[in-house]
Image (cartoon, rainbow, N blue to C red; front, side):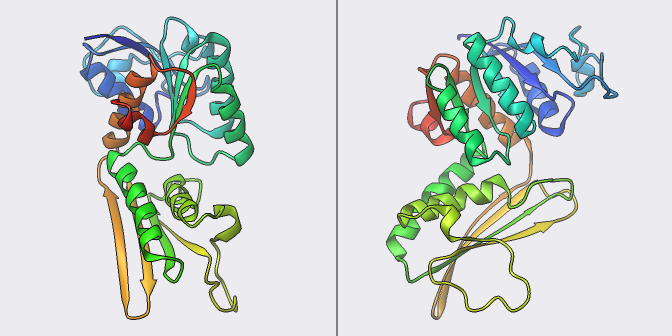
Length: 271
């Protein structure tokens, strides 16, 4: 079995720790080249094995971001948009593959990633759950079959610490529905309803956002018509499902041709 080297920025974050733990558990397939955190964070210099609740591995959490681009095949990024774009440009300069799970990226940032992917493989997804990838396909097919007469609303809930809304996954599902109707989501998206907002537009795709507790992620796509309603639901109960999907994508991306890929592309191409 081929072994690839991986780097993880934000190794002290929720997803960073989960990724590091899985990499250590799968040492026959993955080698951890480097993981970093910000210079002012408490975990600087921590042994990474101990950081994620495992045995000591004699490799510490670093602050020098240049280490992310040395002796590594793939960088996996679940940070924030500004950091993600910095890492993407560095991967481009160092001819490294990249897997991106960061949410909240703007359209212009996504366009820039698409340009960078002409030289390197970039796998970008708002959600690395295999189940959500299937849900997105179901939403697209359902939208086409039901037709424009059915109203579409998307409800999402996450833990109280999540800083962006609607979630990247909710927007991903909305884009699947809009594309199936031949629309741009930005033209039909309705997020905030407060006060006298008037009758619901036939073409709009509505979003409702809930935040609270430690909810990992729940998404419901509702198709409503006179006298009936269909609900497609996905509930994540363990953050490791996203890390597993990202690692699966990284293994595929390490030897992929340059391009801008989704998790669906990875699965369709044997990843």
